Image 1 (cartoon, rainbow, N blue to C red):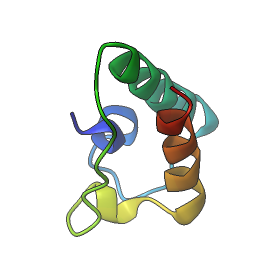
Image 2 (image 1 turned 180 degrees about the horizontal axis):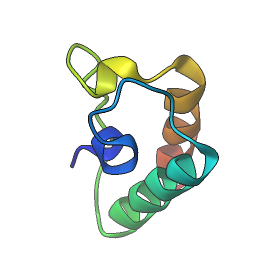
Image 3 (image 1 turned 45 degrees about the horizontal axis):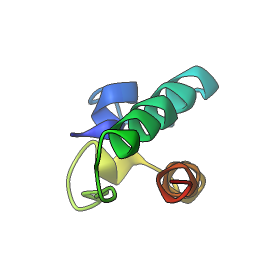
Length: 65
């Protein structure tokens, strides 16, 4: 599942607080449903638009379970 495109779409900008919260919710639900982790796909859009802080927040959420 492309979490970054889930929140921001294909726009070249940082996620808003609400979009980041939405992405974290999707990660949390996915992990609870049995996902093993997340992949960033930073070589291509929209993953290439994410900044370090956004990726750290999403990684922390994935690591909680």
